[in-house]
Image (cartoon, rainbow, N blue to C red; front, side, top):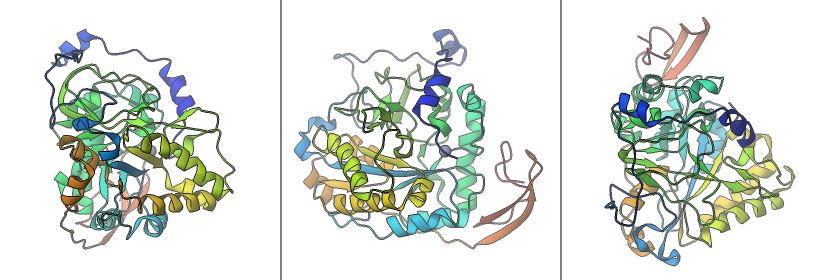
Length: 390
Ligand SMILES: [Zn+2]
């Protein structure tokens, strides 16, 4: 499903009513206090929202992380782009390059999710239903979030046969924040970071990831944003790009004033201009957030994307990594030379005994679905409240 763009989000957001502290008390939450110079909040488990480089490093000593992410279902069509553009890439350090997939359940082929995991990429959550309208997410409760994300983690580990603990991040559909609701469930399900929250105010210098122990100073573009304290829960902000007219965009395919989509050189330059704001600035992680359909529809854009990856994979101080590796680095923010000396990320590949299942009747729309999975076939199509389709 295509991201609708910041403008549409702002329209919905204009109807927002922020959570007040009385509803926090009802839910047993503690209102987040302001982070002041006297506040005790130290890494690895606490960091106030800030554009300061973690560890007090100078920009030249700070690794420039690049996080490439793709959203939505994984299938036999979009995997071709992933194989052709991402597989077998290495950073200049010699370590495998990373990318993160925020996967939604419907029409996802779990055999291919298993393949992506075995290539060393990060699998993260993007909900079971990804349903419209966007107001569903705007109004979502803690219970809804448990069913969409907590249950999805169980579902993903089960059908793709990947370790439950390897799934650490989530992104809410349409980048629609849910106030405290999504953050309330994260600890319980072992989810370490959220990658939903865009910032248009803290782009130069860019906002670094931080925890929600104390009140966030991040601008709330798509309210409601969290108001309670969630110790040790991380926000990986979406530092927006600037399009050719200086308008902010969270996703590359949501930028409005863009170069001709047939002009590879112009697109390469457009990407570099946005990258340099980070690389020549405070080195806040640079995000390339996109949907695969945009790259497959516009070969010149895809060409520019590949050239950009080729470039950064040759820069000695730049690292294309899985999103959670950025959080790991912030917790232990060492200079570039020490970071390189730590070696590459490790993981154990997981087998998949592939099965094709179907037709599976679905309770939500009466349709029949087929599923490709690495486990025993479910009885019905898995959905909200029945993530394993039992
Ligand atoms: Zn999506």
